[in-house]
Length: 245
Ligand SMILES: C[S@@+](CC[C@H](N)C(=O)[O-])C[C@H]1O[C@@H](n2cnc3c(N)ncnc32)[C@H](O)[C@@H]1O
Image (cartoon, rainbow, N blue to C red):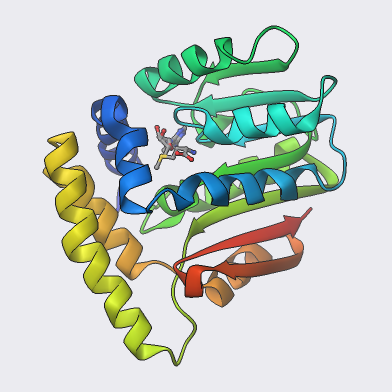
């Protein structure tokens, strides 16, 4: 099981993971979710666009799929910024963005969520896809990340999270099958296709052990957000949370 007491050790472990997996990262995601990751990011992008934001930040943007979906669905005037600390992930994101053309105001910056390089209240909306777990699962810097998200989000702005979750409490059989699937199929496919065993052991441990939707709602309220709502996807295997500053 993973767990760090030291912020630097956790940050550097995650940084190493996400500089080694990028070449096969998208492929593995599509295989282990049977292609549903695209659909779930699209739902999150639509949530991000609900209040017609002018400026959106995609934190831990990785290879850029959520940023690109928001930019594509958001029209020509929306400004979308993706931020991530992994250079190889951002290089893939930049390549994909080129195919969108010049019309969209989409850019990527390299940076750590512990110190987001934008002024207070700069964004109308912040989105995150499949990375909130990385920021909050046994991560000693979780409080610092959440404080930064709150700082750069304007008052009334929405924070949209799509993340793995847990089947409803009481659905014990579904939970057991879900965990078997993650521990055996997801772990092995990830390890064999990426060549990085530790990365996918971390993924499997963190998915199995992560918060359920209600617990995550509580964490967001405790961090200072209000009006936190969620809906479960695929019997609770994933969930979308929306929190307002
Ligand atoms: C599982 S990937 C998710 C990528 C993308 N959002 C997606 O939907 O596929 C997690 C991403 O979070 C980034 N990341 C993790 N911790 C970070 C931090 N403290 N600051 C910036 N990026 C971070 C990693 O580099 C990686 O690209």
